[in-house]
Image: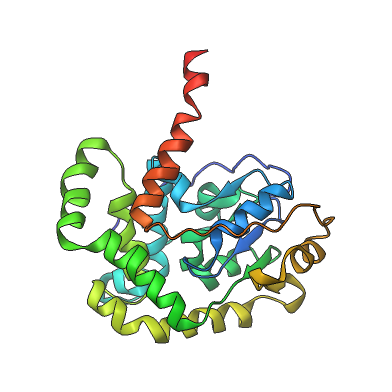
Length: 264
């Protein structure tokens, strides 16, 4: 049985954040243009953005994601019964509530997080399954869970460095696909993919949902959010890097940007 977790303090109510009753949920599954979307949203003025690759050094983020995964995904609960773990609204607020935008790995929580933040705007990008799956398999399943690499990161590097991202990934990825390993994830991929998008569409009110095609440019996104259309091209970030490389690349660049503050 999991130890009872203390109720976290309420997050700072940043204007436009999820906890304030607003915010944006990008609930397409990872490898569905998340980096292009968050780049566009930052250009529109949203500065508090959660993208999994940028959180690689944030152990609190990944510890919360493990707890959320144990609560959301029955495969991790004792006997397969959901409810043996809990993750309250206060827990979600402490985890993601102070962000104006959540994307990338948060998409795995799909309908769960949509229920927690029913007034949030939801952006949904759905690629054709075949092209999405090829990218997902190469950039996430092979990159993160190749046996030797997974052993090194989860058993050796994570305990020494304190980086918990690679410990959390199996809980998030396998859990969301009702699986315990890569083979089961691949077997369940098509069914879970279809269920994910159907569940989000069922839960989110039509007026709060934008089904976005990135090729359509700024107009649909800006109309949905009530923003003026920028006079720059819509960003198309071609993130062909695998998830491991992207996490380390963005994570290290994010960390490096903080060095001047440490030296001042």
